[in-house]
Length: 333
Image (cartoon, rainbow, N blue to C red; front, side, top):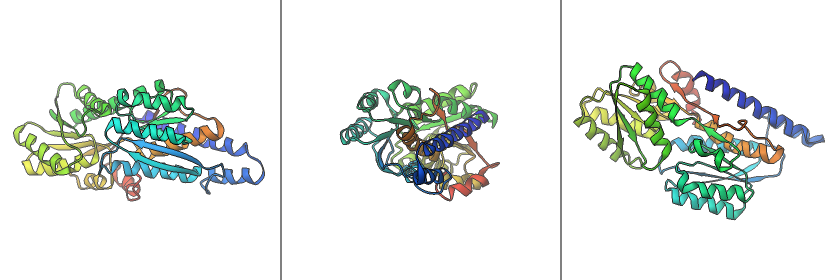
């Protein structure tokens, strides 16, 4: 867990150093302008580039607002035009990738929740000479697809940490709620929970993550039936907030832990209705996915040294929630 933090710091240092190197490759006033940008003083003076960011965001999932804020911040710094599109249907997401290829964008930042459905499209982009970064989903397959780098957390590792945390907190019967079928990273999270919670009972529950009321009703019905469930683990912040209503409606004493955060979830941890969350730092994922394309286009840099760049996992709980809340108020955590 703490190794991850050090690694992120190292990556940030590499990125700043690479930026400074790119600045020094200029001359005269242009060099000075780029140097000031590296210090956070303005926008890069490099030619504007167009970056297509294509994700599997489902309607209403506020997690992606944080991703986009990071991407927009990097785009503003890098003089890049960000074109964001999304579809939770993997076939349609592949079509969005193809559309970006046809448009001949300067770079593509993409999530990959389903490699069998998306892998060929990603390879086509690489073959067309378009630099591609991946983030958030698809880490195990990313580098084999030929992309420049991957920015995200190891989902099985994150699930393992959650399973161990639940058992350490006294959990014996865990409900792992999956909001989208067919997305490998979600299955990996629950698989990791099962491994980490060795000795405890873990059951998956599939819900329609695009309908809050349906999520609440499905979890509540399960809790009403399964009185032994003492922990509910959700894989996204909106589902965790729905689970709070479910626990109350079922008269259950189950505690709630979740993957991912948003502003409302931070408040729920502060109030104690949710025990903790795993933070994969989505702002950082969006930022690095765009900034890595700029670094490559302007100076030939790559991040990660042939390995995925970890942005998590880390726990947010009562011990550090006040510090996190300051950034959540800005919509960046």
